Image 1: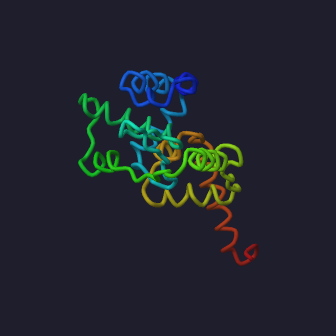
Image 2 (image 1 turned 90 degrees about the vertical axis):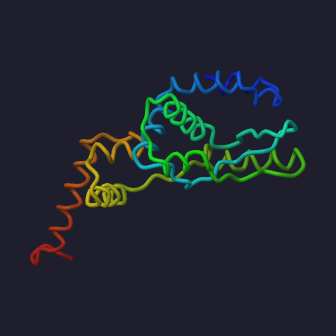
Length: 185
């Protein structure tokens, strides 16, 4: 994978176009990037977690956290520039103007910050929702006009259409039961 190759690459070379293109091509082969790309195309880029960057001596920047998100954005923009995708100007602008956190300070402080941010995301992980919260989210998106397949894509493809439909039906059954005078709470 490209990021594995990047680990041994001196930081000064990481910003080179050839290195960047090689890494992006490697990342495109992985399903997680395609899911993320599809999700962004479905609902836009949601800046929930900031991308973290640091400045290089060359005046360019290197991504410390958010490589997959930036790779998905680059992939979409490449396809758009080649005429393979049609995007409205608002979407193009949102993909090109991503808010970031610039890690600054002494090298050891930047490294500590980088590992704290990465540790929160990749070691401790983001806590998964319980089934009820998942069902409420799926049902809210459905009632907002999205079809189950669109919900699947919007959520990154990590859930099947069948599971989405089951959650929606189960939540609706629970609501009907709660409203029933014999069984309600």
